[in-house]
Amino acid sequence: MADTLAPRAVIGVMTPAMNTVVQPELELLRPEGVTNQMQRFRLGGNAVSDDLPDEAAKLMDCAPLAIAVGLTTDAGPGGPDKLEARCDEISREVGVPVLGASLADYEALRTLGAKRVGIVTPFNAEVDAVVKANTQAAGFEVVAIKGTEAPSLPAICETPLDEIRDVFAQIAASDCDVILQVGTALPVVALIAELEAAHGRPIVACNTAVYWQTLRAIGITDPIQGYGQLLAAH
Image 1 (cartoon, rainbow, N blue to C red):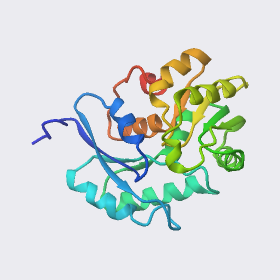
Image 2: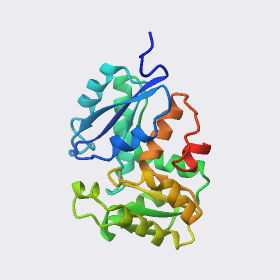
Image 3: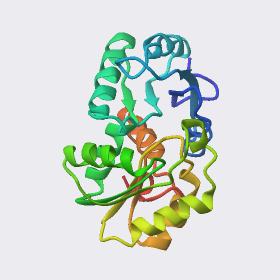
Image 4: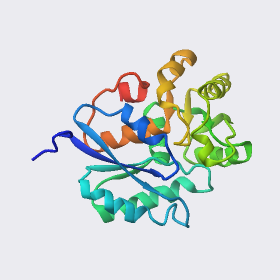
């Protein structure tokens, strides 16, 4: 029998333990007949997270059709590749697709036909240089990048919305064709429609990207309105 509250799908959602943004943002995006079920993990170790496989195994008790990992690893050299390898490893163990936000970002950019990308981050200029290198290695030209310079990982969740708006405006002043936002603890999802209207170009927010890719991986193609072109048209 189908899950009463989720007759179409249960989606597993995983995020770092300190991240208070992924859960409410992905709830905003949930289609009718789908529920999101959360599990948290701690960052660290040589493979993104030592406890990620064990926490994913626990999440499988509620029988999700796929798992969205609300984490971008663009801030470390080769980080997106490490996250992809970890997700692939866990997918083989649990038997469902496991999708990380960094690779979802790149897939979303390709879907939107992005060539010249502007990037918003929660980081400082030193870390932004690493984010830029990883994005260029994925095949995109980065024409502008700016961070909100949060002083710590927990502080990213506390970034004021007007500060986020200001950084987007600075990036939009470049000749980018799409704006990418990385860092899943930066609260952007509720601003996407406003920002796309203000700046006249698509926005790929990492939390929308990983949820979009997860839905599409399990065959749910509903247009989701109010949160940008990616979910509405692709």
